[in-house]
Length: 362
Ligand SMILES: *Cc1c(COP(=O)(O)O)cnc(C)c1O
Image (cartoon, helix red, strand yellow):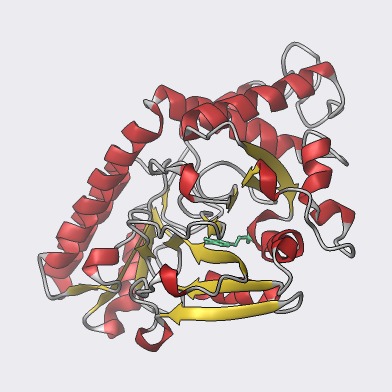
């Protein structure tokens, strides 16, 4: 069996022990004589799995008690609608502020504009989102219902190092490409959400960590299955939950706990990222795409000084089992997504290849 190092942005690599365990118990989960995706979501066994997963996520994240975790359908982008529908009514103006640091914040703002006022208060678009824009949150209008940010910008390879203190105005963060990869003080946030397919499991579902007092304010026309209250009142099972996603996330979280939890994986992630950034910075042959001060630890974007070599870089990399390094077209060049499951050895293999490629083509 040949397994590659998958640098794709998502769906992304999952830890091998997780995949092996899922394979080994697929035909007979928990001694029930059926797979986990054949078991009723209302069964005691599945309810126990969901509760265990919830407790694990809460424990590993260090989530404060005044937060609920909701497991919702539609992955990350569905939240671009759910958040305005649920949170805009917090203030009569139905106004949300967006600090735009990349593609996903722009999409979220456009979707929110369908439901109320969606205001761009800062953007780094003029420099093709190569950094997190500066913004003084004390200048926010008091009638703002919430502030939306994207903590890690998957396409552009930047991240927020420090999060703004928005005071009484809830801060909402799309953490799809970095949830559980770094220690977060959730007290700074009103809502943190993430599609699972980058750091936590398969696609199709999102985890929404939400301060309990922000639940129950949805606009009257909010579809039942986008209303956070519906999920909070029904243990995230108002309808049939994505049972396989819950199961896989459970295995990923147990693996994360075995690694020493979030503080330990954060250290490894920093080591992994440094290895690749050092290789980029050591030569003019490669150039980092994001400003150094705002570099992501999860998505490393870089270009080749001579873009005519891009094709050769990608095909030679793939021949060595270094898969999906092509950058998003809005940035060009390369992107190495190195989520929690990417081992240090994968990053070292990439660096070895980059240096070898430069020797042969530089
Ligand atoms: C990948 C990604 C998304 C898109 O998620 P979907 O699950 O496809 O909706 C949204 N936001 C960020 C920050 C992402 O990285």
